[in-house]
Amino acid sequence: MLSWKIGDVTVTRVVEMETTSISRFVLPQAEPEIVRGIDWLSPHFLDEEGVLVLSIHSLLVETPDQRILVDTCVGNDKERRFREWNKLQNSFLEELELAGALRQSVDVVLCTHLHVDHVGWNTMLLEDRWVPTFPNARYLFGREEWDYWKDQPEDAGPVITDSVRPVFEAGQVDLVETDHRLSDEVSLQATPGHTPGHVSVWIRSRGEEAVITGDMIHHPCQMAHPEWSASVDFDQDQSRATRLDFLQSCADEPVLVIGSHFAGPTAGRVVRDGEVYRLDF
Image 1: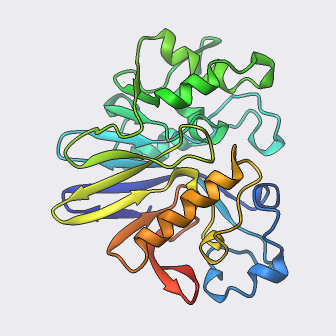
Image 2: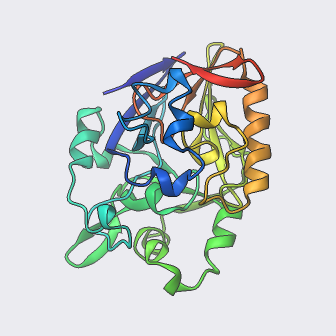
């Protein structure tokens, strides 16, 4: 189980799955013959056939005063169109406990955005009802993000119905702005494009810095090809601009970048590699 210290803050990766099955859909530009030429991607971020490996995980952020869970994966028992994610039965909650957090002990659940693989464990099935998985937590959703999703038709998919609205109904949601500060150590930053109100999470403690990317960047290959926007980006031009600005600002700086879908080793520092970038881990 991967874990990092940023000053007084500990971040631990809690994995639901690692997969190659969605990579060609998410980043169709990443043809094997192209990404095999990016030597630093192997062996961690590519399989033997040159297919991208993506991780679906949550990040447990423990400050001196709070236990924050960033994003909640796909979740169990959910009806999903993608076969590999449909009605999962996995050990995510047991993995979270191994990381040191019972579900009842989580203070805050923060969703960087409201896509299917970031909200699933917001709720769990209990006696045929979807109830909040983390009964003592406040769930933070971006106000701008929710303003977009709340008006989407229900037949667009069940994700909001089974993984978001039940938390509102339980009275556990706080809508926040894209620059919200959770604590002295943890704050949000707007990184739009993937979704209208997408945010990344900055951690600053004792002179050290880290950022949890969310889906501003899906895979380290986008450091070598920052022009590659994901097929699932709401606004591909905006996501490209956001990603370029982020890479330029972090390059060669002592900022630990923790990828929300990066396979292990998952975190590293952005360094310049000619006219583009790579992950130094």
